Image (tube, rainbow, N blue to C red):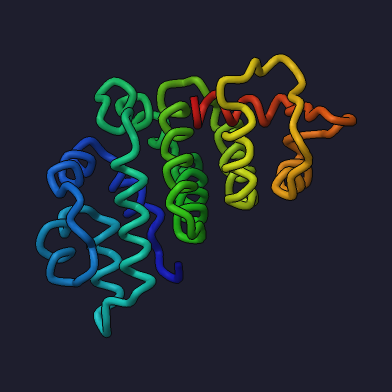
Length: 206
């Protein structure tokens, strides 16, 4: 997005924002009056509105909708202890900018809602210390680059499966998305899921 949102984005990831969005329920964010009235106290939303004075575009609506989904799908943004640790971490300006740039990129440019929810789950794991920043960054980039059919196939073949064993799976065109992403390798009638693929499944889908 072509405006300065780094600070606004980070300032919007708060328990207060989570509370506002929770109270909003499932109301559609499809007009400027609703956004300007209900969500105007969220910094990133105010920024979008003020910078879109000539018209509240579909792109603006989509971004706000995706950001809303990202926050509402998170458990740890509402967790005061986890959030306090995050707030301390982003007191470093360089780290703050790095996190903001990455979150803005993946949220703004991802189309599928399922990916936004995965980013949120992985962000929770980052907030509570299960993932380091580098691990979070790599996993979210993997999801960002992975075709949605690849994500669905990964969930499908690993559901109720022993992750430590190779999986006997008939050939499926969706497997190619996993292979290209370095998440799987076929050996005859079986598929071996990489350590990165197992980690993604455990942290985002179990």
